[in-house]
Length: 138
Length: 138
Image (cartoon, rainbow over all chains, first blue to last red; front, side, top):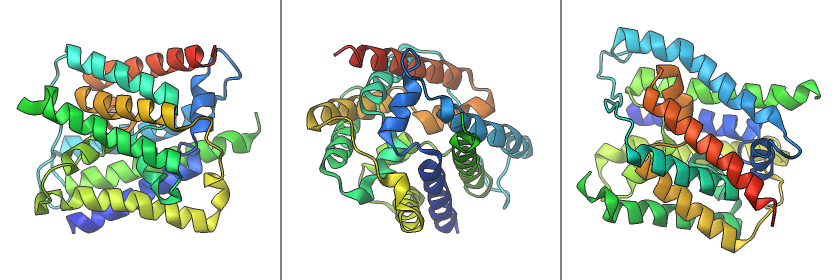
């Protein structure tokens, strides 16, 4: 059941990424280029997603259980630490250069474009480097 | 701006939000794609099944949409291997260090009114905008 839900969620998520233009790095870079020929369309992606979840997430969190009474696995860390800021800043540099964040990276894999494959390969390498260096104790 | 220019991003954003809502309501999980990938990079275990299936869903959803309308994926990449590899490394390392990306901190964290996610989102958006500006000077 959990597997089927995750698969379905992934499919819907991916359709959303495709329809919205998030899978297209030109659209993403156009959105980030606010000092140039800014294309604000992607603000509606984050806006739409956040509005939907602002309603549903808060109903679910208030219930404090899944539909079947299971536990909600929510982040508990509330510290604004250095790793949060530095990590997010490094991600921002990479996102600004490539116009691809992790979701669209996976959603674009099926194209088998060698440059996309290089991006995804090095993204996984970056995650593994973290895992075996700073992330060793997590 | 043509109304279609933001209808697609809005529709896509709503779908992304619904996908995350389904995941939280039925599985009790946050849909953070960088975390899903990062946590999958271990020994293959049953506990990770839902993560593999979500990622499979991301690929399946794209293939499905591609057959409905390939135009969503008919883009030319604005860069080559060099930038893709640098960007990928930064996205991979940064999202793991900062504990989240556009989906985990943005789509799921902002609606929970998480201060960490707000700081992370403002940081990676801001840095990505500055990076895009700098990249355009070369």
